[in-house]
Structure formats: structure tokens, C-alpha cells
Amino acid sequence: MSKKATKAADNIYYKARMEAAATNDKLNSREGAAELLGIDRTRLAHIELDSVCAYPEEILMMSEIYNTPEIENYYCCEQCPIGKHNVPRLEVVEIDRLTIGILSSLKDVTSIKESLIEIVADGVITEDEKPQLEYVLDSLERISIEAQKLKLWAQKNLKLII
Image (cartoon, rainbow, N blue to C red; front, side, top):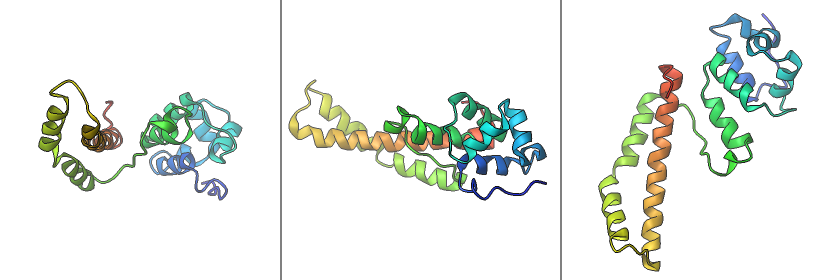
């Protein structure tokens, strides 16, 4: 077995590879991982050392081979110039914590629905309705994030393609 890389120890792609190495011995080395990914070992080293940014295609391959859909989210919200502005950071959590988060985000759904109807009923959004609309949008964003977390959990734990 190869020794652990100390310089890359905090890199998400290195951590994902090491986690996956528990079920695929070939991933214990950069050489084996690079072969499976179809990229050069040196390029993988640079990615894991944060010397270069991975290409989206490489992230997709890593995600599939390492069974870590969370690195796709990481790439989109931390490294993609467009995603940095509008992709929320998600983490894979246990199903019990996830369920509580979902239920919490849905607790006010009836009042959100009623507020939205009230705001748009006349077809005009007035200045005094804007704070109420912001609340509705924030609530919908929380629901959306919880739904995305459930999707991420299902992709990782049930290997569902969603």
C-alpha cells in the first residue's frame, strides 16, 4: 500500500479518492487512480495538490469512480466561475439529520403559499410587499437546498441517478 500524501491531505479530491480506496485498492495510488480516470498521474497529482483546477469532465469521472457526487457540488460552488455565484454548498449528512432539515424547511409551507397568493393577487408587487416576497423566496430557497441534499444523499447511498 502506498503512503498517504501529506501535502494533499486537505484536498477534497484526494480525500474522496482515499475514501473510495477502502473498496477499490487500485485507488490507493495515484497511478492506479489516474489509469481508471484516464488522465495522467502528474495531472491527478496537480489536482490533488491544488496546483491546477480540474476540468468538469475530470470531476464527473472522479465522482462516478469514487462514488462521491458531493465533489460535483464542491466544484460547482467553489471552483466554477459561474456556479460560485448561484450554487449552494451542500454536504452529505445522515438520513435522520436530512429528514429533520426537510421537515423544518417545510413547516411554514402553508403560510408561504398564502403569502405568495396575497402578494400576487392583484398582479402588482408594491414596496410594502417586497419584504414579504423576500421571505417567501428565502423559504423556497431553504426547501430547494434540502431537496438537493436529499438528492445528493440518494446518489451517494442508493446510487440513484437523479
